[in-house]
Amino acid sequence: MRRNRDKLDIDDARWQDAVAREAIIRPLAGVTRLSPVDVATACRILGLRRSRLYALVERYRTAPVTSSLASATPGPKKRSRRLSDELEAVIEEAIRDKYLTRQKVSVSVLHDHVRHLCRARGLAIPSWKAVRARVDQIDRQRLVSGREGGKTARDRLKPVVQEYRADHALHIVQIDHTLVDIFVVDAVHRRPIQRPWLTLAIDVASRMVAGFYLSLEAPSSASVALAMHHAVTPKPAWLAARGIGTDWPVSGLPDVVHVDNAREFRGRALARGAAEHGISLIHRPVATPHYGGHIERMIGTMMGAVHMLPGTTFSSIAERGDYDPEHHAVMTLDELERWLTLQIVGRYHIEVHRGLHLPPGAEWQDAVDRRREPLRWPHDEQQFLYDFLPFEERSIRRDGLHLFGLRYWDDVLSPWAGRLDRRLRIKFDPRDLSCVFVEGPDGVHWPVRYADLRRPRITLGEHRFALAALKQRGVRLTDEQLIFDTIEAQRNLLEAAASATKSARRQVERRHRSLVAAERDIGSTAIACRPEDEPAHLTLLAVEEWS
Image (cartoon, rainbow, N blue to C red; front, side, top):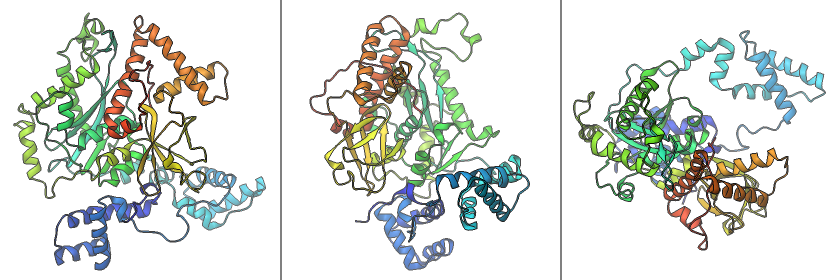
């Protein structure tokens, strides 16, 4: 079997070629017999020989992801750098101060400036080719903006949209976040804690809600990953777990995902994860509100329904008047999640949509029939989620891997411990740091737990909160035991205060919700990570906002 390609190690030029190939080869791979006309057309567009095209089609059938179509590059790794950090800093300084200016100097003039700086600082002078290579790696937006101005960069590089329209189901999916206009209560004391965050995805063609994710945490790369996962996967099991028997037919990989320019939508994992599965990720250009109109209207519709619930904040202070939302709050986060689901599948999907003049549920089937290609689903749902989770790169030491100052070990690391000359990608769920997922050189993910299995499950927010507390106490060098001791002490304090203060109840509920949701969303992998003797209930603490 052919080993999976590492999509994040593919250079940008070959990656763009692979993306272009995937759009052409995907429909060819879906048919049993290739017609000579289709083959000739694809060869002409891609500039390939027939034998090469047939090989790529067969490769894509075996592994239907974009990275399988990337060309191999012989020799040293592209874009590898052999200059010292000092020389790299000098070249970057010269590019910033001399090249990215409205004077638009040539590379030769830039090289002369680099030579001058190196002589002044007693450094070896890099070659003209080395300087040219770093100029070629400058981001196009940064290059045009620096040398020709921001307006020219926007006019030249922004997407040109003649008409914003989705032609068929899952042609365009929009994703956005909102702070829900309602206070929720904790599950233990039934007292108000905070307003939750909703990440919502909508299919533009049918106006069907593709999926959502409800959390007490501010939007993050993890919440985007979980909303994407919910949108593309079939939902019968998810609905059954919440006791809802109504159908929710939307699932499948979208062709295009539209998002705004928030930080959580700019992560490398999201960009490469989308392209890996043949999804075009488009960020909303500045000052073009029509790009996000569908999702914003959908959010407005959902908030209008929420305004009928006890504990709502309404949409403005004037509308709220003297109504006290915290005093009237009665719903927990789980209850609100179930209510939103019923509102979506039991009302919104079956009521006549003002813009469509028919229910979104009816339009969905028509939109599916308009597709020229059948709906696509991830060939591995668990792998799909991994592709969108945040990650860090770490070397596997002889004593295991170290992440966030915590040590992890599993026998699966033995072949790599102290022997692998490269870092591996460590995927993690910020809601539960007790188990991380190591992406091996072959692309397979392996769950790895704490080296000390007696350690309790903690969240990334708890970890950061504990480090901040230790820093305030003047503790600079912290070991793993000290981190867990601090977290345990903070949990005990919060448990004692939970019945008295809202902030403590909020922190307790956040942690409990995060750990429960992490185990539910990650599924059987997370359960396999948990040792048999782990207690069913642990003391609780908060999750701070994820970066």
